[in-house]
Length: 345
Image (tube, rainbow, N blue to C red):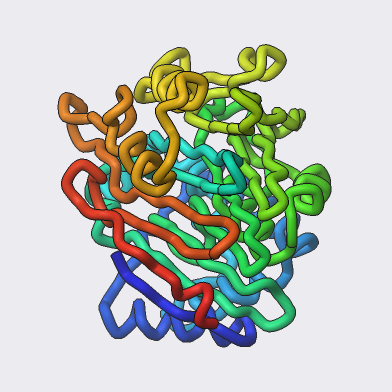
């Protein structure tokens, strides 16, 4: 996993990244079919309206590597949304991932397994951002500029999980990983993040988990046409929210187009909820949370029978201290290592 620090003007942050790509001879498969090209161009206009700074960061990368900006931005905005036909370069979109947050005895903890094809493990990144006129934050990503999860200087955690969407239902807008980046940079707490998210046009189905230092936490179940805020469940006076690769609320389940092909999403969700309802998570919260992520309490990361699919990293955030514990690989095999870089900015 790469560890990068970026600060200052968005365009210059993009140029710095682009120069790194160029030095390392990183190339990008920018082949898009007509549907993807149209989706990307229309999405870029929307993203530019809401988040012009991120477009300038993308432009900084494209300028540095000598790529056409609009094609490069369009390619990025198709990620996690409609990258369905690049078998020779990038496999068909598949995502696992389980994310949760809980408040218990004054502790506010977030945890995640990020499940992907293993070829993405080596290119994954844990990055620290200090953008001009924006929140400082850490973001973890299998891509770049956008991300699957993160925490900002205010102790707001933001995370996405992928939910399958029929191609006919996809609309121009923010994909889930750009939502994570936008909210980390723009929002200070869960309430503000929900307000910001309500206004964003959404490209495809996803869950967005939000949790802050006050103990406020929700999952927003999103489709291109509807958003539903799912409140935490309460067990023994403690709050817990969880998101896997499915919608949990009855109202939103009909919008899930996976037809069960979601790497045991419902099973993973149930393991998390049952671990809290049974009282398994207790005492040393970092240790018991890591045990949950390792699969000690039920199926979470045990993809041994799945070809080309595994947990590529696991994270635990302490929202009050801003300290992160991360296993860079399968958490059954890799230790959780402390990362306190957000405190040192």
